[in-house]
Length: 321
Image 1 (cartoon, rainbow, N blue to C red):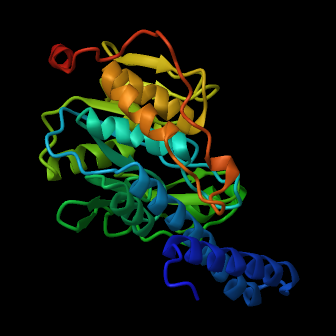
Image 2 (image 1 turned 30 degrees about the vertical axis):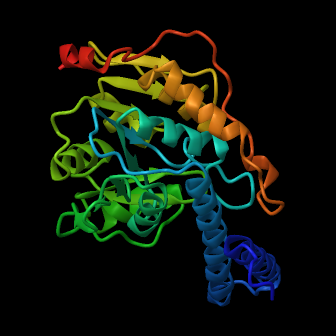
């Protein structure tokens, strides 16, 4: 073995082998509980691929923790920061560049997702973020002091996900009035009625001492509505939440782009400093991608040109409170 070989590349090749093997096993596994072991191996291989991509992007773009934040961005993960077009979920170059721009501009990014809190912790650590909320607002993670909080009530232990057609019948049958459900394309999430992404971001801001800062939010689905409604600045990727009506005095931007390109546009609105944007774009252009890095994640941020600047001066946000 070459002692000078990049450990990320070595890990990537191993993860790809494991991913291919797990997919073959799952394809031929018998129906029922016997498939669980193969499915677990598949998920772990996918997560390893995600971690390696994120580690490389964080390293080359020099992501760092915001020390004196001026604004908070509540950021959805699936469909905004990340997509799964590579066969596993990950952010691409545009998403990582957006995080770097936000960090340089003094914007504290807090993840807000339906994903498990363990996955939130991994992303917060990799991207040098201040914290995040997971499980549709049921759990919080403090990236500064490695603390977590559970916001569930006593009766909110979620059952195994069921198809949407059975979810209401299941809850009504057992009188689980403290729990509701959200139907996703391939599963159903069961959540405590007392928590949501809006409650979570407010609690996380308070725990991190960020409650006095203006809040921005970007999301693309119905479960993002509570956090969007609380924000002074709201961003929606293209063709998402078409019936959303902003609250009074909220500034809303509907992007022309989807996914991490929409996040890049939002970052440019929140950090309108052309010099800082140029610094990030120059860093992106200078990158030399290793052969292993997926082609689909190499898309550079779109050059937006002139557009209305949201939060052109962060000091003006105080007038929105």
